[in-house]
Length: 209
Image (tube, rainbow, N blue to C red; front, side, top):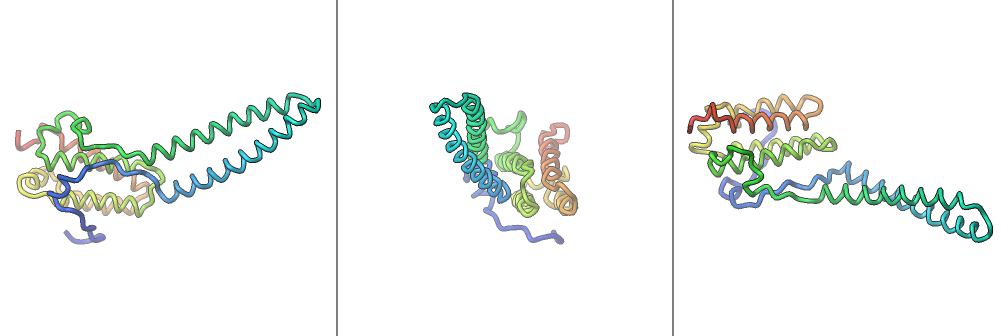
């Protein structure tokens, strides 16, 4: 294959077959910057709330009204929800999902050879990553070309099976190259992999049926 950026080197089929496959964490640089900014804002807001609460309680004990205390109580509730939401968001992005078990594969995948099942798991992993709206163009390219490399590594009957259905690397690569010049390459790439998965699982065009 010619044209476009060079494919990155990856492990061969044997290594891929043994390596556990998990969905990678989705901590992008932009997300990390936003999370750090959110922590800073929450720390500042929490500190202000704590000082204001102390002042309101002192005022209440001195005979002041209860309205400021109630208002600060409501503000504290909202600040607490902000901390919970931030922790849940970061935890969700750091969590890695095991995709190596059979339940990670759709119905009909069992008829595929082990290397094609492995490719299908990889395809589903990359699909999930590419749906992240904060993924940079560079990260999108890396994910797509890593996947394309794993596709090109297939050989024998699996490679012939994919070539017969125009699902081989030579057929898919031009679509990825064209996609790089469009906006929203991540979602478009995820849609491409979704169509790849559907055609791979299409029994009506299965030459090994």
